[in-house]
Image 1 (spheres, rainbow, N blue to C red):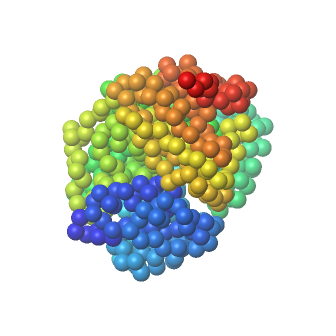
Image 2 (spheres, rainbow, N blue to C red; image 1 turned 90 degrees about the vertical axis):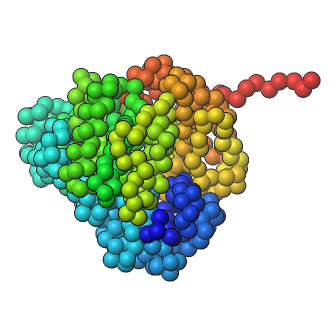
Length: 469
Ligand code: ADP
């Protein structure tokens, strides 16, 4: 890796640690950045060097481009990995890195721009011959235009913010009056959340699965897909459990979706890791939704079934090297992996974020279990950032084995001090529809009854205490 000797990680939490770990294995010096609230965070402790880039609020630290660039320059970094979130899909940041002579570990600023605007991404994909969810022709300016679209495709329809992300900036409308009302609300919301009030419309599919394809492309003209992830277990359009491969795909469908994802790669001359997201309808038809031009939270499930280290491939590609798995034939699928997002959220109180002191942290272990986390006993979860504490990834030869392993790993996982989503996952891995893999994006609404979940959380699942002998 001649071209990259020192790499700065422009992120925090588990993903920053994930990148630091990849650097260590590649023999690259790592530089962490941290905010004043993250001084004691593991990512800062484990990197070879750590630089404070500002006060706690992310706008002043993890989103502070000048500070991050100067941290990279003063620490002698020659590359920057953005992780996910924060500046990962910010074309201006990718450009600023390049202008400062730093290698940005990701796609070109141009590709980020074209895929970052959802409406532009849709038209790019349609031109490339990839099916998209029936939608408006670009941005919709007025409620009248929205009504005309809905009358054409039929209700329900979905209003989406062009700049939206992370499950935010979406509103469903079931009929005309709801559409008129939600249209204005969606624009106001989008302006407040993303600084851009542009919205477009899509037909709302009633019971799709969320299937996404991981792609990798290098500067030597190689492009492959690392198969799919099924991320249908969501709450309010936010992913909670992801698995690979998808129990819903036949070999033919898997290949067809993989090829469609590669069309996206070719359409924008995409280089580095990316994810092409699709909705799969109950009749087997699939539609492009968006492309994420960065590594995803759920990338480990793909790593577990393919054996490909996605972060290391990203760094090799950015260094101008050939990726290790350069041909589709060199990637084989083995077994089944499931990821559970362990968030500092209270499942009894509407999944409200719950920062605070983690008094005890005992992650599970054993065969087929991986935990990616920046948390340790005595760690203070700051209130400023997202609530992801850890990712539990289980692998099994079959899906049934992975589910059984998940049950025992979740039982072993102990977090004391703050509520987490662990009991939610314990509930789901026993729930018959999940066990049978009958999971659509409305799974949580349909099958996770709040009262039953509350009872489950309150009773707990710890074993009865025995008597000493
Ligand atoms: P974000 O960028 O905010 O993650 P996405 O476009 O990826 O937004 O959509 C997130 C989720 O919203 C999807 O996984 C799916 O559950 C739901 N969704 C998005 N578009 C549609 C649609 N047209 N019909 C039904 N559900 C949709």
